[in-house]
Image (tube, rainbow, N blue to C red):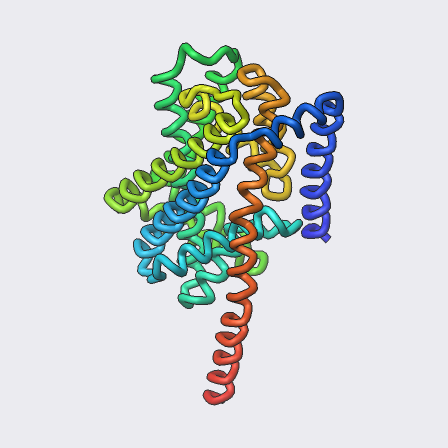
Amino acid sequence: MNKKFSMLLRIFVSIGLLFLLFWLMRGQIGDIWATIRSADMKFIYMALALFVANVSMLSYRMKIIFRGEDVIISFKESLQLTFIGYFFNNFMPTAVGGDIIKAHYAGLHSGEKIKSYASVLMDRFIGLYSFLIVAAVALLIDQGRIDSPTMRPMVFSLLAIGLVLFFVATNRHVARLMEKILTRVKMMSLGEKLNKIYAIVHDYRNRGGLVARSLAVSVAAQSIFFIIVYLFFISLGKPVSVGNTFLIMPVVAFISMLPSVGGLGVREGAIVAFFGPLAGKETAFAASLLLLFGYFFVSFIGGVIYFMWGVNIAEVKKAEQEAEELKA
């Protein structure tokens, strides 16, 4: 029942917010469609190519983190898992996110379920911190070029939250406290499993080199993603500055984590709200739809990979069952 309620809530939020956006922009729908139709396709093609490059770099980051836990997956397998994650994030109206799917299949492939889930969790943490780093740098470089009184406080708030989470994840005293708290959770041995995952994540405090390398790859990957958004605005003939894009999009990314189907509706609303004063609401909404198309593009690739993997996973399960029968 909880899963069904969560699924319905996400669908309601996504469809509701998207419908609200279209309703608020109903007088400009014709202009928005005309803007999209007149977009410069060469910039859109460049953006889609960079989307694939972005996914490739995120896959390489995940491969680095998995290897840090002695979970050996090839770059090809990491790339497939990342595309599959996009598929579940953007196509499937389910409470199971793309990260869970990636961890599940990585654990099935490697036989290291706890380490796989912890690695995917750490991959997400590093991704979020790279957003914060990019936002902080953009704030320092482009601080005087954005006319939004709310942007700086939001960026500083996110940076503060990031520092608190870093403290929780790395401090020894907090680690002991977390262990005591999680040990009390007895239901379905959930506390024990969460303790194992937290212990693995906490252990990354002793792996500075690995974290630094994956963080550097992540910053590069997120920078490519922000350039994608910048190219979409250029294609529409209403470019915004690179600095503004690098400052606003991390905030959009965090807002997109609110309950929804892959950020649908939430992400588009945030783009219109923050980029609207810079490029006009019609152009911002058109850019958000182009970005949505980009997500559908990589999600389609992920869907093809997933259905191809479905056959392989079935064969693996069958082999495991046969092995158990032989042991019996």
